[in-house]
Amino acid sequence: MGASLRTVILAAGAIALGAARPPAAPNPLTVVVANGPYAGTYHAKADEVVCLHAKAQKMFAASFKDFDAPTARSFAEGGLKVDNPDAPGAKTGQIYVAFGTKDKKAVEYDIPNAPITMTVKGKGVDLMGTAKSKDGVLIRVNASCVDISTM
Image 1 (cartoon, rainbow, N blue to C red):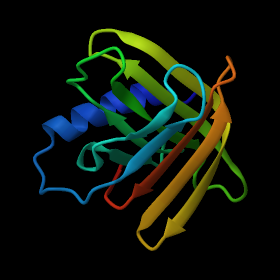
Image 2 (cartoon, one colour):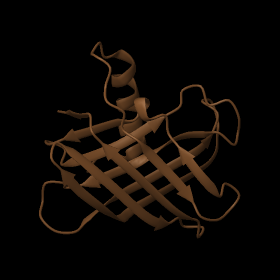
Image 3 (cartoon, rainbow, N blue to C red):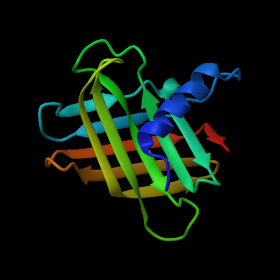
Image 4 (cartoon, helix red, strand yellow):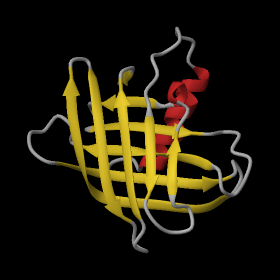
């Protein structure tokens, strides 16, 4: 069984904080929540978005975590995880978005088996996933990965 996107976000955040490497190219990630109490467009800090291709685990992810999210309405973490990214055909995976502080999440949207479009562009990858949460909230996540960590 693959790792959940939340686990990937935490691991990627730890890698980003602890890795001594030259500054990475920004990886923009945008979340659009179409309805519900958190409706709006949210932009992750592009230089804090981590894109990870874990070949042995058969997954590709773009994730963001704000370790200093100050309020219950803050965009705290989110991203996309693609299952079996190297297999041919349509892609599915997980969409995860959370709002709240670093200590307490006010709301989490976790959508498994979401359809995800994965487009390889040279050495980069564009991801887009759109799906409804179990309570009917429509969420779209777009990410453009230029700096991709591999393992």
